[in-house]
Image (cartoon, rainbow, N blue to C red; front, side, top):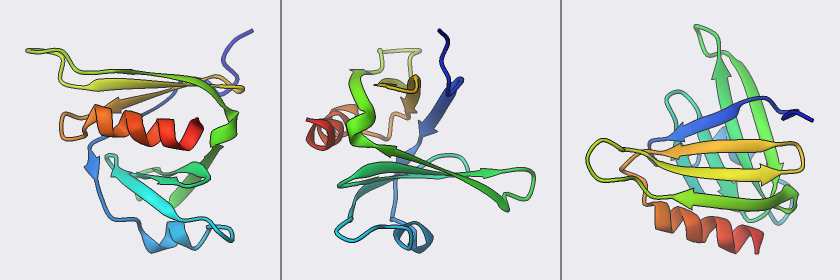
Length: 122
């Protein structure tokens, strides 16, 4: 059986502020824990789920929102960047729907990210 979610992957470049339009979709008791900027998108970790806002098309007006409840993550792995030519750290989330790959730019602390996942999932 293949990966039903396809080759889903993102690159997180740096931490950022949580945008208002994301917080408007929070449910009661949900709060933001951290947010990360991608090229045109944003990923927000809350106390309940990971939300990724994915702007599409040339204008970026078409928006797809991914919501990943933490209880759907079965396992994860983190790999820090190597020395010279390996600039990104890598994270893989193994879910019931398939594997999600997240690349972390050198500006993102992979161990802080690892703790963020552990606190959310464990």
